[in-house]
Length: 348
Image 1 (cartoon, one colour):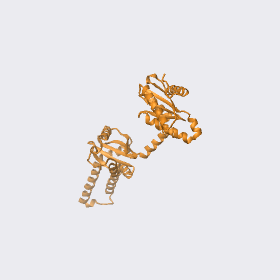
Image 2 (tube, helix red, strand yellow):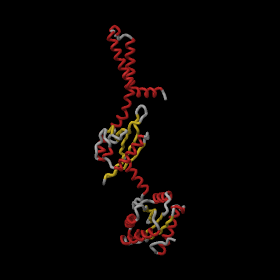
Image 3 (cartoon, one colour):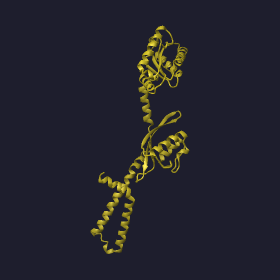
Image 4 (cartoon, helix red, strand yellow):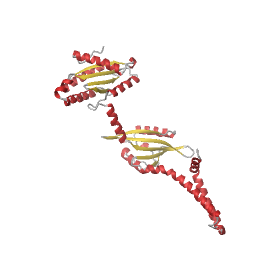
């Protein structure tokens, strides 16, 4: 550690004592000068030297001490997008900027006040999460979290919260400082980019990359039962060629909605390309899969008046089969089913 840094730390820790010493010295010197008027000679090098030395020492203290307020000043100047507050060791507000007051009123319907605890104004679930974050910071950990706040029909609000412990000059934790940064625009843009990467543009279903990743996650989590359904529309090329691509696109979109409505909530429905669709069903047995396929087949015919071919494969993580293995087995069964003009492929 260089001399300048050591001097800054020393002045910060002892600034009150240094200031008191300079003021006391100035008072004593002033009294001494009054008592001995003959000594009060501005031309005297002793007097000028002492006054200049005191002025220089005091300017150093003021300069170093003023640097403590540079960061808070910058923060308070940027409160339109960055807010701050601080908690004491009893989880009560000990600092709240005016902008955060407005944010708290708008989102949580209360106005924070110094000395007041926020836990009386937020839900139990949010209180537990917030308490956990405060305790982490009290233990000396600095970290960042991102919270998603629903706002009904409006776009959800995303707040990035940076927690940091507050120390006194002896190194003891005396509170927690938290910066709140509104990152809604960034998160919304990120979600749109992720959607473009993982979803099919036409049907808004997931794409192959996403469903393959979900399959690998099932294998990693050691799912005992994993089913993969493969399906395509019968005579789709005929409809596309005779009635036009717009009609064909509409068929794909309507079939996508049928699959989404029928399949379980944990299913991953995806379009692989063209009229080929795949459904990943974690924890769904063969018999349940046959039932779902029959429901989808009937709904497709009643709603659109066309049919589709299906093939599926069910197995366990213990089989050590890859996504391609599941896909190839389901694909063979689907085309055997299409060739035989049957709605449901045999499993064996």
